[in-house]
Image (cartoon, rainbow, N blue to C red):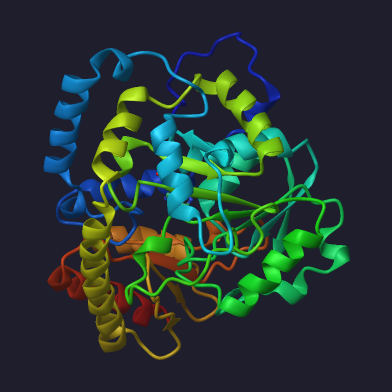
Length: 398
Ligand code: PMP
């Protein structure tokens, strides 16, 4: 929104508030809500996957069977049966996670904010992937860290690059091993082992943010780093991509000493995540419903990803490259150096197609010739048409 016509006040805002900026691309992307725009910009799950009927039935059951408890204040840690469910879900034969390690959060976005709150002082170094999730940069930036970018390649974070010089004094390392937002990359097993080993030897936690892990198209997930080093990894999960993001329900799994600090921070923030939502989601998932739901989401996204990969191969000119994700919601595209995707976006929107430029996903030194495409909310025929429009604009600039 343009705030220039708002009344000027004498109110003194905090330094923190004055440093807050709105994303430049948000304005451009607003127009993508027009039906004629084919938008590959959103990070939104496909509404066709939302189990509305299940959620309606569960809501009725909760309100019929436990109305007083469901509508009352409750513990900051979260609804115990849901915490037990999460603990069982993330436990493996190597690592038993206790419910006392689980904190239910208002989306995993709140998990990132709480972690920033309890781990970051102004100017303290934090380690992030190159590029990384824009929303994590936003959440952490409120605590004014010094972001250090960890080198990556086509397979994600390069563990050998975590030298003492790079990691000196860091407060946390933020990583997404599964189908990373924005690149769609998945960290191979040997790198997970190396990163878990690094976490064990470090004086700071490695945060494993895992919203997309369940969405691997082949249904053959790689082990989490949490399962390899449960006392050194802080794991963030969410129901957003497997049920519905509007529920705003996520969780942190952390060693008990850090968990305690996170609970204190959360208490100050919002007392607790809505009791009703926690009970509804527990009611939906407790008897194994996700094992029915997730394969359907995977199958839809796999087909749409295939459609986009085919369209890219069909339409993109030489010099444009992209990855082939094995799961998740995103494809990362690299154009010839010299094409600035921020400038390209304005022309794209005029041609009724949208994407997210890559630059905002970098904590520094952005690669301006990159962009992120999401294929999950656009039907295959429209995917082909949208990619064709985008390819025509790129061809004009090569
Ligand atoms: N982490 C990553 C990597 C994400 O892509 C997102 C959502 N786009 C989130 C966290 C936040 O998700 P939520 O708050 O809905 O759980």
